[in-house]
Image 1 (spheres, one colour):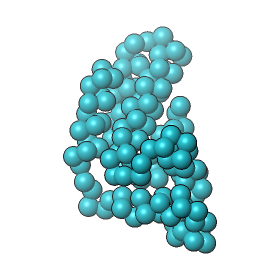
Image 2 (cartoon, rainbow, N blue to C red):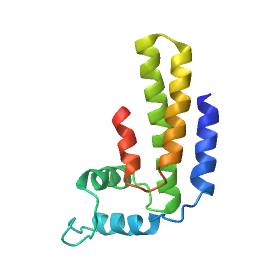
Image 3 (tube, helix red, strand yellow):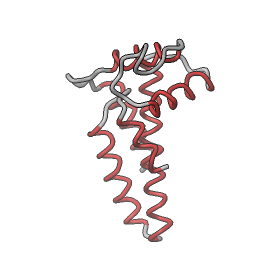
Image 4 (tube, one colour):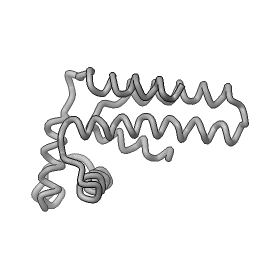
Amino acid sequence: MLAGAAAYAYFRAFSFFSITDDEGYILQTIRSYLDGGRLFDDVFTQYGPAFYTFESLVHRTLGAPLTHDTERFITVALWVGATAATAGTVLRLTRSWLAAALTLVGVFVHLTRCSSPSRRRRLAHCRSW
């Protein structure tokens, strides 16, 4: 079930484009921050430091390039990871495979419908980890 979710997440992340998408703007602010810009002084953004700290960890620590594809892979990993962690927690607490499966479907549908790649909201998905 999780493998199917991962395949759908990949398809959704790499084939869906929202008319209100600001992915290019987000990538530019991340690039400015990684180049040493100070948030709110040198880098204009409405997002807080947690998002940029996360991006800094991914790109500086892991050496991942800052590209649209990398950001979309990060999004897929967060969608699938948060879904698996939440379903695993429900399974552990309830010992019910049905409840875990329903949680997996519900969380996954919510995440893939309510956020798009490179958006600040995707960092909120880490909260369930």
